[in-house]
Image (cartoon, protein in one colour):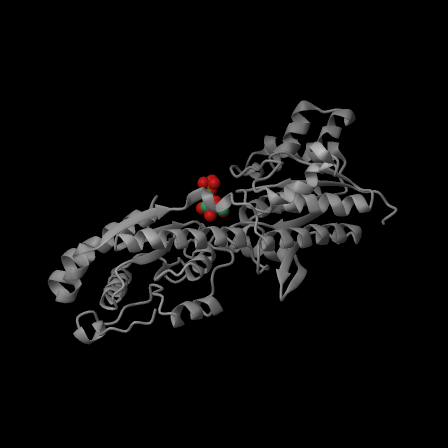
Length: 409
Ligand code: F6P
């Protein structure tokens, strides 16, 4: 127990993900042991703007207090204790606009922070929101601790972000479910997975769910002809091995043949594969490809289902470890840190370095992902060894020897 009482703010910012409420609960529980006060900001930094705009009195500000007793349920279940099981954010979140670009809004946010009289702020965010909040914190001399969350798992410095593992579970379960309908109809099902510019979610979910092809932006920045031919060859190979269905995972960050973003890259892939094997490969390259003409293809876009499943055990554990670590850092008055998971334990990274990397990457059009899948990643190697096609440049499609049956899955 710490004698010096503190007043802490907590907010969730950017796209929601499973485990945010578990972090909030952990922070409140750990803070209460120190007799500290925790204030929950509604809708990220917009909560500060709201305070300034409405010129709330000290008494009004008490509405933002989070305690273990709040949300009490019948039978005296402490609502806060149940929070860890829910996805979403009880505080609400905001994922559009950069107040740093609007001096009037920025001023209100800084004023709201002052009015609340916080000793420190815990910001739970992804790469985009942490960049924004870091700049505000510099301007307002806030004592900031950041906790990484995002299903994209692309915050530099941490092996895991809160929410990622649950999203992987959703993708894995979807592939499992789709296997049976695909098999019943001898179909290829393309599953489009979120991740923004990163392929972690598609790679992890794809391997765990038994995909035959996984296309991620780090290895397949765009759907070149080579990649399309490689996909066709893989599908042909499956057929030759007696497998008449298949699962293809494509991350939303993969671009089309002309290196442009598509709204629905899964639909584009389907159209292009059908075109390639139907018209080009079958006609010009090798008669074997004509067999692919009969393949039926469907596309499933998992969308926001990936963000809203109840957090799995690992995300709750991570949320608890991160929340407790954030309070410990405030106790030590060690600010401007990102709480991370590395080498089997909780740790910290200087926020300055993390934000520098994020800013650098956000300015790099070719490689905008702040923490991409590495080509030598153990799971990339695992996928290769399982015979999963990852969009690598293709062998000579003109030579019939390349179609010999190699049934590796
Ligand atoms: O960053 C998380 C994420 O879910 C991405 O994977 C996805 O591209 C994006 O957010 C979707 O954002 P929105 O909820 O604004 O559609």
